[in-house]
Length: 345
Image (cartoon, rainbow, N blue to C red):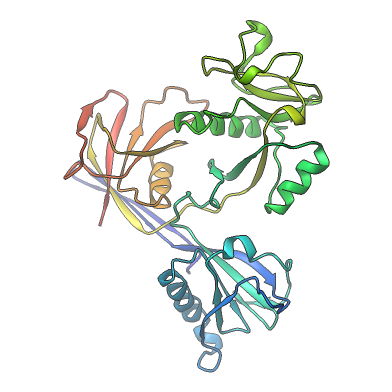
């Protein structure tokens, strides 16, 4: 079935192969009120008059090919066999709200059953969002109140992220460290992550333990109160400290799609690290997740996996590369912590 995935691990001599399969997943059933501008504006094809109930899977697959040929990320089936999509469909598909008028993976009249491609440039999160294992996050600034934050995140089809459980603190730790590894927090000095009623359960040190000078002109007196934040000192180290919504960035979050994809990988070199080809870092649980991250990252051809983790509490480093050893500008470096894997054509 098109929404399932297959993971096979084979051992051939000393070469390990990973194989994963699937290119798109279900998003859900959404209304189309047939206004002047429609949620999925482009009719790419119509299979209504030639399809049967036994060929619905073929219709969905054929629609996916039409959308893929246009470099569209989302597509949907309406009136059973009409294939709809659009260049900015990721921003508009849910504009008219959800619907119950879908059956067997296609929409009836006035409804789209929407699908989303996985092999995207931003790791199965919408553009401008950042990914962890199961969630997508977006940083937002200039927030004036909780109501303002709630409305903003809802408009982005997400919700405010405030950590409450040990797992949510682990998610925050991974996000913060991943963004730091990728140098995506250079202009961010403060991030709201919980309210004061919840005890902190993450890896950051309290600012009060050493009272370092904070970045961006922030001080204990101008941070505000009511929440707790991750705050950065002038040397780039992160702490946690009380804060207010107006002083810092907030996090919007939403569920991240599953991470299968089409491709196979081989363990090319043990105790090795490919240099000068890095696309991005990701923190992962194991090598299988690292392989999946590569599959849904545009232009990823290989990865360096930290099999001896620097910190098991936040996962292993997964370095996604744009090149391979053969023909790459960089070269392999010996490492006691990393193995080097290549994506097979």
